[in-house]
View (cartoon, rainbow, N blue to C red):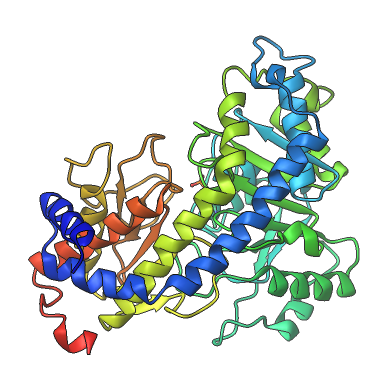
Length: 438
Ligand SMILES: *Cc1c(COP(=O)(O)O)cnc(C)c1O
């Protein structure tokens, strides 16, 4: 035992973590050095992509300032949208503080690119919970369904693969837009790799070339060196309160894709005729630019935290998705505890690691947009931000918790150590790790 690790164990002790938990966690961490190097390589590649796009578009000090009022000739906003278009290799992009979150960005993309009589298809199973009301899977005012836009779904096969036959049968005359969710969201299905998304899009366009293929890119950005827009997606959509905001964006969503799709969305976000020309950026741009600049590195820290969590909990005998050694395509780690107590203890551990609101205790509650009580641990600088260290879980079988984020790896590590400490204290996990470490 070196002095420095003794000092560190003393620091962790001050943070309420027992020495045996520290020793166990460090053993796991020591086995992950190669994985972490690979994550750093992806981050390095994406960092060049972002800086290159900023330089190409001549981002200047003036771009960091905002506008007020109508926001005509907002240099910083227009340049940022050009930067996003270059990062995602698309014709155009819409990146705005007026887009309030990921759900809003996705609703905007759908409502602006579908017309009454069209059909929306999800070939990858049920979409993210909050989209159910947007689509009208659960009745809601103003849903696509209310506007005469129907919805069809083809589930993934039991092994997580695409049901190509089912998809072929589901694409019809009226099918106009296909929504492909990259990340697993609140499900225990696998997250789709960019390669798999590319194969699916090629198949879909083979059936009907003019389909609009949209990817819900939430939590996926910068986890690989390519994005779905590099493999044929017409539109990629996500939240700035997640990966591409880099932890700094205080609000916002983005769409990047074909010029026509983006224009449709801009006409819906502001008004027909006005489109992208209006929409003052207020004081948001500095954080949008700097957040995007930091995003590749922040995403790497979140990925390391997720890999660490997978390895800890798989070793302890819990089912984890993705598994400990699996390649990773988003920043979410699911751990199935099988009991509400496990989910609650995990979330309370994450909360106790927070720099902001570390003293509060999260409890399950009925959140708008979700169909069962949800517990959320989020002590964040940006409220509810899930690129920051956070965890949430719906209180329903199989009682899985979804962990994500960590602006720094050190914080992510502390968070996971805290969850294990909490599970030990509640008697859900035994404090004797010796048999596991042999
Ligand atoms: C988070 C998320 C959303 C919704 O984004 P919000 O910013 O929470 O509204 C949609 N789809 C997926 C896959 C997500 O992870």
